[in-house]
Every structure is written in C-alpha cells, then in structure tokens.
Image (cartoon, rainbow, N blue to C red):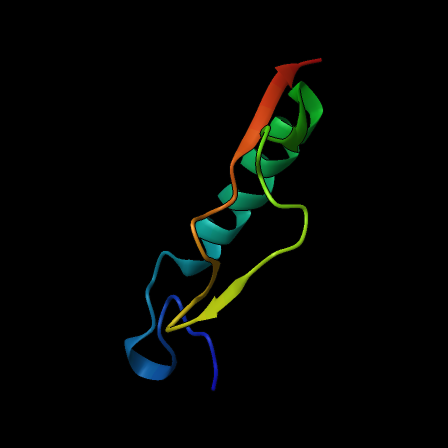
Length: 67
C-alpha cells in the first residue's frame, strides 16, 4: 500500500531528487504569486477515490487570483 511515483531500489528514477526540488520551488512561487480559493460550485469537503494514487472524484477546481 505504498505510493512510489519514482520507483524504488536499483531501478529508481535518476531524476527523482531534482523533480521533488523543482516541485517545491514551483509550488512556493505559485503560493507567493496567487491567492487560491475553491471555484464556485466546488464541494468544500473532498470525495476521495483510492486507486494507484489518491485523487478527488471530479478533481479539485480552484480559482486563482493574482496577489
């Protein structure tokens, strides 16, 4: 029951570390530049679906406004 997006062990993705660093940088820049709120009509409570990855049924729709 583990989530391994980049694999594990000897066959692990060689770009996993840089990808996770890029993710943190991009997310921090987006949080600094935009204000996030749920889009109109979007349910406030999640309806999780468990497959290979965890996701919300129908996705999560956000409204971004520039700060």
